[in-house]
Image (cartoon, rainbow, N blue to C red; front, side, top):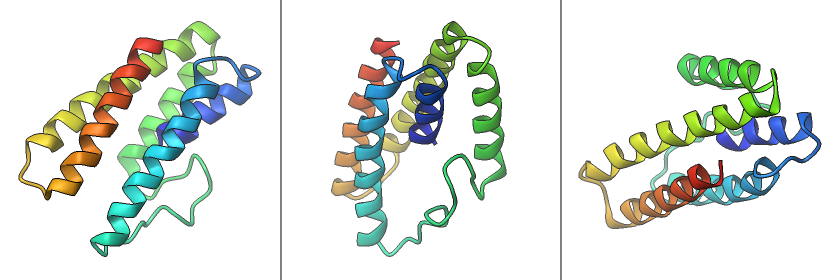
Length: 122
């Protein structure tokens, strides 16, 4: 969802940084998670959906709210980036605490470092 949201905000604000740069990073994160999904035979139920559309109502509501707020002004868009990254960090930290395979933990730790850098960028 971060990839889609940041791409939409980058488009709205003529490629404004850090959105345009972080979108590329989020695409790599998406690919890393996709590799894990394939490895463990977990279907990616959202893969066939267009950007900004999700089969999870909670995720859809977050995207819609953040996009609306971020569309108000560039400053509001930066605040949305901060909110998203803080939420991602909390979710990733909770996931890392779970008993997961080592390869999953490694990807989650990589995503956590990325989110921390993204937060600093905002």
